Image 1 (cartoon, rainbow, N blue to C red):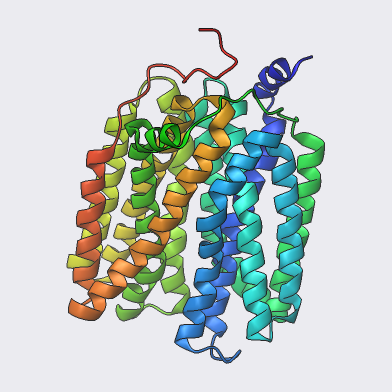
Image 2 (cartoon, rainbow, N blue to C red):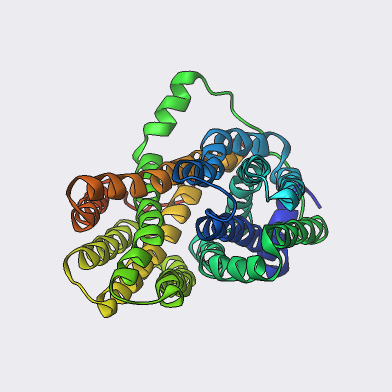
Length: 400
């Protein structure tokens, strides 16, 4: 059986896709579990606020620089070895965290995890696209749902692990999880051979990067992720101001993530059946995010904070699978890795920019103004939402 026929057979076998969902869960779980633990334990391990900020940023900084690189590598050699290698590197980087009582070792572990996630995250996205066939919406919805689950339970499980055995136990769990998923990927995922690639000039790459079919969904992903990053940090702060305890404040993030995880597979499946179009769906998703963010800014009370979290989560759950599916359907298969890596770069920039915008405005004028500014920008991002591609973009191997 040639690689294309093998891929076609794999599309009908859910077992082959489950390791990819698990890889998505791992990067989200690892990022948020460690981040929440750092915030909670920063004083006990001697971190200043500046040191905490640096440690939190290292994961994202590594991803910003390396995701496009590893995405292109997965196009060149095939995604499976990049996913397996990235998971093994994540396991090795997590082991550094066994000496997490030293800030320098924490920084090394965090940076190592970010570099490793830069490899397996875009390669997993590209693999989902190649194995999805005509059901890109459904399978990106499931992929996003599992990542959302990682965001939801990461802080809670991370806190339990730290309480039980400190950072050493948390990093040991993350290392073991990555090893298990790497072995699962080796066994279950089919090898997707690299496809013949067209040589592109710098002008070609620039044109591809500025096409609305790429730039539009990437802006949508950046806006959605920016809102997520800001909500994870500032909604618990709002909940705490309303008198909720630590558990009640952290549960706001869980409510957001559960709402997002629940809606993504459904929206993706409706998209594949032609009941949700890309542009209107992305606009509705961003409108929900903007409305939820504005709600948190203007209406006091714990109930409204939770309502805002659910509304933001629903918006993210609507916009994200539509944007990823649009990218997959409008990109030639031989450069899916590079495209997904570049789109993930946009997400990381949004993830960093959203909290910075809200925090900067909050210092200058108060938190409601910061959230209001974010709501306006997310709403404006809807102007970039592209129309659905009529068909999947042809690859270099396709006739005509």
